[in-house]
Image (cartoon, rainbow, N blue to C red; front, top):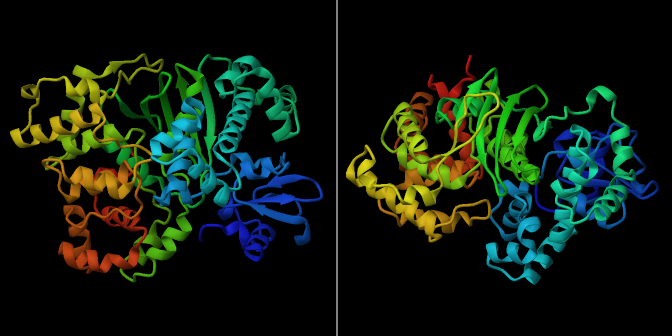
Length: 494
């Protein structure tokens, strides 16, 4: 699939007529006769092709005066896979908008983060998505409002401000315009038993994804490397603490056949859209697994691995700086040793949090707090100590910034210039923190062992040459290769 699919009318019509859920989030169908917009898999009888027009975003549909379909609820479809597989300006802007930057810092803040003028960003987003940053942020606010209306018993005034609206009037007008129902009518349509419990700050949500999704290595990796106090596996759910713009949160994520169940406890409800965005990103839920697997199957030695367990995702992170610190702690030591090192830092320097369910005790320490620690207190070799202290100092003073908006090539170059940062550390950060779908680890011991067993070249140079055919999905090939091993990261905990 390529950028601008909405301009290929014939392919869009075919996708709508076949109700193909794989294309949900890639484009939206607006019906000229009813003035309603839908996701491609909408269950209603498809309109006549001459009555369909296609848009690249829900925001563009809303700007053109179309209302969201009440049957297929297009605002709840998975996000477009494009924003997590590209590193250009539009993709980086979309990742930042998803992280709530426009609501917190406005369009000028978005522009500053990206290093472009507001005019350049407006122009590029309009050209590709049919909507500017304000309209895209507004669509996200409407979706958050609907979520809160339908999953909580909060008063509407609280929902309005939690969703990011500046006034109750704007909230009412936007919800009515987007969904053709007032906020109270939206809530009234729910079966009484579906209304959420009125526990302050606790939300139960469903996170959609494109099938197939193999949860084994995804949740297995997160659980096997979990840092005590910050993360745990409990009752079939991966739980962790979240550092968020307005406060903190605790999330529990449980894999199900057709969605991920998400239970969120937030100290400030304004963090809801950011928390959801970061959890989706950590679990790689906006990926297009069919496109990834089809590409990897073209290699006859990888094809059996893909056929055996399709839909592997790349386990990522909710905090890029945290992951970089943990990558350094994990250099040349076992998974268990890396967890021990991290747990000591958490106990000594993490911020305590209250977990109503018990088990989680701290937020992972911020770079600022780690930059103040005494290097002599670190139980690691002197050279790795220097690597660690340089990293946290640069993260703390802003010399190095790792975020959803990072330019992958630039971030790689900056990391490689730090003492003790070799290709493996840089690429594991690129793959799991920055989200580069093409990051590759040819020197990784597990990868080399798997390559040897499968009959792939096992020297880094030869394996990199062979892996050229797997691009741009080499990070996913890494997951399939790792999965040939019996390491706990490859299995859902019992």
